[in-house]
Length: 462
Image (cartoon, rainbow, N blue to C red):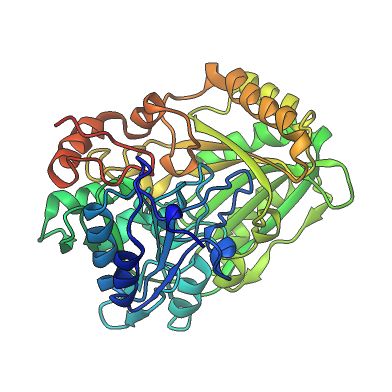
């Protein structure tokens, strides 16, 4: 083992004695190349990302985050932050520098009287849901249970409950955050209000959030599941769904999904979740379940935790991935034609694409009320290419990028920041639209040196 791996971006070595002193100040672990846990701790969900940090701090509490930021700033180390590590761009790891790993921080409490939860940033969606559902409560948090709550919420936070209760960021009451100068702050509607606005959609640009306080809502059994159609029926089904989704009640979240069935053929699936009385859910979903004679219908009453993990099987970690995404405001016949063309030609049976419906309460928030600006009714098109053989990367990446390019005439310029890969500054600007310049001003205030830059980066101008 050599000191040379503990380097800043300019390649300057941090003396081993200094590193050992830093290690002794931590409540958690310091992991370095060659240590037993190193390779597992640097992995992210997207197997195309293979980066090697010089040091990994598995944080025990907020004090470790403060110490890590101060150490990295003193020694000019690049810093990355890791929660669930789901980001397709691989922002949860870096080459060289210091990785702040929040995954050990999983403490959580629920206040039944105030209907709130306080959760540390290492929690996954499924872990959070298990705790809140033990009290018959929930809040909007993703649709895949092994997603981290931190990155999801900081980017906006889409999920099954968004029509009824808004996005994850709309249910955020406060955060505890460590800023670039090492201060541990509380941000809420009454304290550091500008920072609170920024973290509700602005990602990890403004600091390391160590805990979140959420508004909870009564959520019992839901009426959820899916209907599955042969791809040959998809054009008629999508035309029907276009009108059906326009009339969805707030309680109903739906998502068409194009994938390959375990039996082999390409299929179209519509997944849905009704949050409310089961009988009303059955009534709301009856037109969808009876149109076009689907060859499979799994809808029924289920607990919310099961609904939240319903799609987990299709998104396992360890696959090579390329994502592309933008918002589709109108599901026109011409757009449907392109969707079906690419559904029939995807090179990997593991790949899929979805149209998550944004409507209801999530769309009744002013675009400038939070940093997340996308508040009109639309569909979030997310193309998820996945494969396992590196020799097939070029054809899968090409298919994904050509798909998005062919869809451009039908898409908005905007994009959900949590779906972005490494796509450049213009796409980041598109993610924030009218809120971008305000975010730059706050970046100038809270992180003028761009200390936090391993992210969908909002660059300071000072």
